[in-house]
Image (cartoon, rainbow, N blue to C red; front, side, top):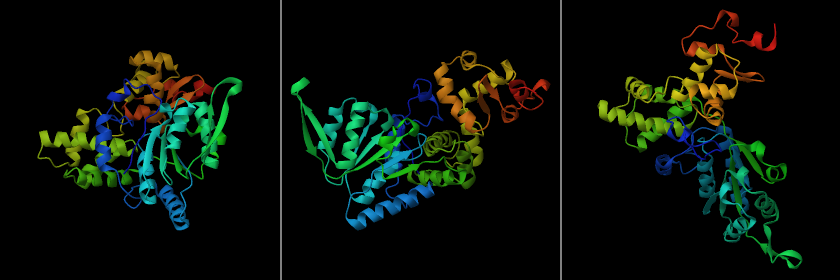
Amino acid sequence: MNWDDPTDTPAAPAAERLVDSVADGEDQAVEAALRPKDLDEFIGQEKVREQLDLVLRAARARGATADHVLLSGAPGLGKTTLSMIIAAEMGAPIRITSGPAIQHAGDLAAILSSLQEGEVLFLDEIHRMSRPAEEMLYMAMEDFRVDVIVGKGPGATAIPLELPPFTLVGATTRAGLLPPPLRDRFGFTAHMEFYEPAELERVIHRSAHLLDVEIDPAGAAEIAGRSRGTPRIANRLLRRVRDYAQVKADGVITRDIASAALAVYEVDGRGLDRLDRAVLEALLKLFGGGPVGLSTLAVAVGEERETVEEVAEPFLVREGLLARTPRGRVATPAAWSHLGLTPPRSQGGGNGQQDLFGA
């Protein structure tokens, strides 16, 4: 059970979505209580857990600090949780900051110079750190040293500052934006995958136990199937279904209660919410399945272009409901089926692929 970190997406519409994988204030407060404390308690990400366990055990056996760790993946999959587990497994304190908070090399120097030996520094959204700070981090990670510049112009002097050995845990939702010199300095890199429904059911049962919520296996399966492969979303849906069960039923979450509750919150059986369905309905009903340009599609649903592209599209593409093509967005046969609509005959059930690429 795991979750974490925001992305660079526009926040206004996304912050109101029940299926948003970015944590709001309520999520952060609840997550602190629900986070697992060690690798054995961490659910999912089996390969990452196994590999990370070897890295940490070997470091403890040598009496050394663990190698620097880079965690990549979508928001809400457990990067922050794993960083805290790394610190706990190493018996070390953890310092948490983020890339956007480090705008100058001096900001990073102040943090590094105050680290204790063996301390874990968690740097969220590491791809958004400023370039001068990034270049300072190269030397700090490799040689545990930074050069502090004193003065300006020709009289400026670089004073070397030795740092105690520490472990940097970097987290990013966009590993491709990290420059190779920075990526290469991490001793261990891991990519966090989306969760299978069975894993999310285990997450939900564990969270329900901690929240003192009674839920049956069918109810957990119903919530897991609508959680978009993301533990953070699963826990958010669980809390909203709990509220419904307390007000409308006897407090016990069954499949029927979970389904009725999520219908109230407009989250359908595949995890699509109002915005997702609005994009698909506009694409299918107004534009015959496409292709249609992104700006036109955004106007049709009354949202900003960036909101459609960054908030709705990634999940629709991952679910195989929408395709991005050079000529615009195109609906797939699965999109027609999901909304219970029949494709126009001109598409021949092929969502316009022949029209798009030629017969």
